[in-house]
Image (cartoon, rainbow, N blue to C red; front, side):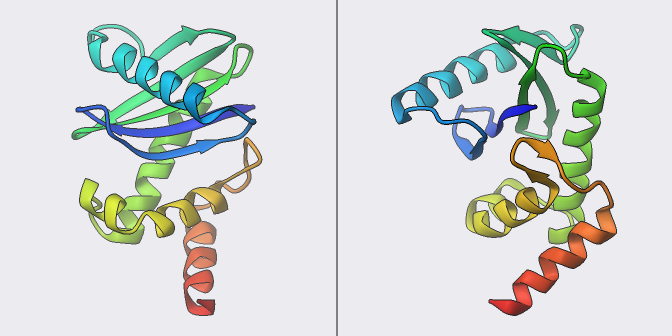
Length: 142
């Protein structure tokens, strides 16, 4: 099960955070800071998996952004690494060549894409076409 999903830039600014279990605000900030410190300082020759507290961090860097998912210790790391890649492909298709500014200025749309993809800490849909159709349908309803 997914514990949280973070999208952070190299400077440590959190651009997107989705928590799938209750955590106090101060604790969230502390965790985000620690995760950023670990992910940014990690050498590229090592794997993209880090054990942290009672869960695993799976991260991937795209340009200047770090996409990080925290999952249970027993979950499959490669499946979640692929999940990160699919999420980036979804954003890239939705915004046609996504960049950090798209995420900053359209954060509500990014959350819509994430919510259609992941629900209650589990991957709900894996079809890129289906997710994008649902998000565009939601956009029409607004």
